[in-house]
Length: 181
Image 1: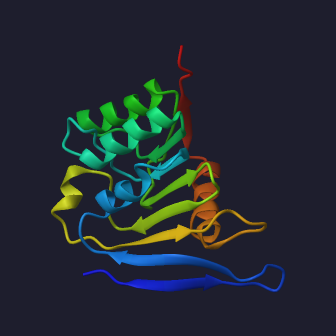
Image 2: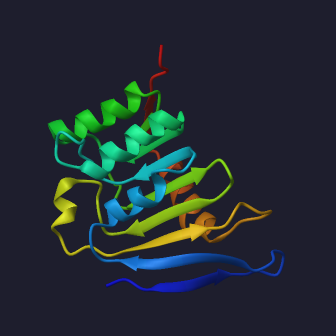
């Protein structure tokens, strides 16, 4: 069972920012994909130690990547160095689509963020890796939807930008990208 709560952030310099949030306790990856699909996606960032492609059983990854390709969205995958064939295939699919993959052996965070052309964003922060196995595990996550982007930082920035900057600046991180064509 999930419920909807209003989460707010405020600071002395910024007006109050509202975001809708709900706790997801069953198949968090599918819940994220269902919000993303059908929108005009501009950018997709997936931070997860472990990811498997659709052939490896992760339907949510396949649906997200297919939709990102249709929308010609930027795709960034931040993950651990590949440890299995399905993990390697998932990383290669991102690269083949012109996306960027950053590897970090110490990664433990699971943060997924989609940015839409109208400025709205959605984030999933929780315990689920982007794998088929996560569907059957007792996972928990918070799905946050922000309104169209306004001036200044908002809740998704607080939950996403700082950890991702930290991961990308970590000396153990190495980035690979392949331009299409």
